[in-house]
Image (cartoon, rainbow, N blue to C red; front, top):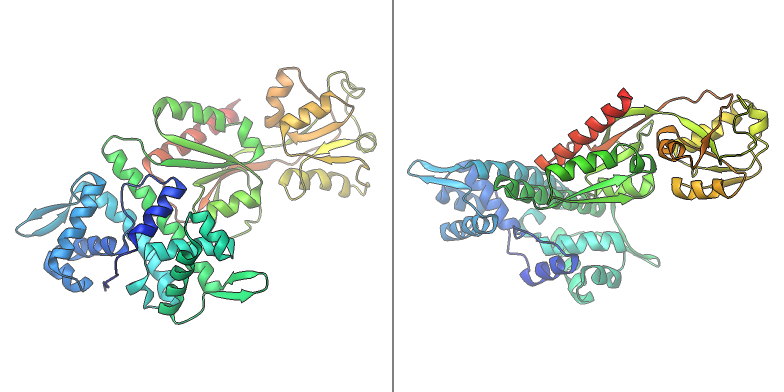
Amino acid sequence: MWFLVRLADTRIYCQINAHLGFKRMLHRNLRHFRVFLAVADVRSLTLAADCCGVSQPAVTQSLNKLERDSGGAFFDRTRQGFFLTERGRVFEIRLRRAMNRLDTALIDVSPRLVLTATTAQLQALMAMTEAQNFTLAARALGLAQPTVHRAVTQLEREAARPLFERTSFGMVPTRACQDLAQAARLAMAEIAQAEAELAEFDGREVGEIVIGSLPLSRSVVLPEALARFRSARPKQKVTVIDGIYDALLGRLRRGEIDVLIGAMRDPLPIDDVIQEPLFADTLTVLARPGHALVGQGAVPLDVLVQHPWVVPRPGTPSREQFDALFEGRGISMPDSLMECGSILLMRELLRRSDLLGCISTNQAQAEVEAGLLARLDVEVSWAARDIGLTTRAGWVPTGAQALLLDLIRTAAADLRAV
């Protein structure tokens, strides 16, 4: 069933996109999207107008606007009806995924929101869910505070229920509000992928691929894959975001990151993401060249525990393995531990001291081969850990994203073959 949705506040929408630096092909007009899907289903302007509760000229205007923005026809107009072109089918698949996700969340809050919610209101809701303060949300969107307040208030009025709890700590989103904001984020991400695929259909490279990178992947696999990708797609924008797992996972789930690469988690911390193993890795113990333990044969654990260490941060798989090494044998942890997630910082610390370092074997390979660090022979049998890709469950990559993923898999296969 299709519903009439009033026009979004164009001024708010444009201000939001201008502030965030978005370069959109398609105006995020929910009414236009619903009209398009209705025509795709019933293949008739008249029937689609009846389904959506608008006039036939309004349907024609919506389709013309979408096609003009996208750069080509979505439908073949024939006497037998309106039939999707190849371009139209590309858009329809993505848009239907986006709107199904969004409408499910809107209905869970209130069925009326399917009739009334606008993109501008959803943008304000997403910003408020993050900031939990009208002033901060308005600042993030580049809007006046009353504008954001009015958008959220209108949503709550139409839903006939509060979406935020007013507390002394700020505006805390209800569970239903959080779910709606998440659905809106992922729906917008899906539409952005639709734009990228439409551009690809025309032989253009637009959009952005965003990769979340954990420490190991920055020096192993990812550089090789990105170099090959740049050769194949010289104009495609790619952004690599470094960070810790929890922060990157949150951005992945919100649709801000397309794929996360690094050490896999067992068990998975949440059920809306999936993991794909690429290769197995082990830990190694490092020291500066000339360290007293270098070249001394298999160094026993009771000797290692007496030395100061640079180790990964708590909560990482590498740190869990390091801690288990001592705890599993009933040995107290070393007294002197410095926590560090950067191989570059670790290298410089080791070079300037008698500290020992514990890090991924593959990650340290370049430093060892360059003679900057030395690998110790130790009486330790490290368990292998899986390094892989993490993506949202149900995520469907664009052609450019799929190419990059394949290149990452190829680089990982090359590493396994060494």
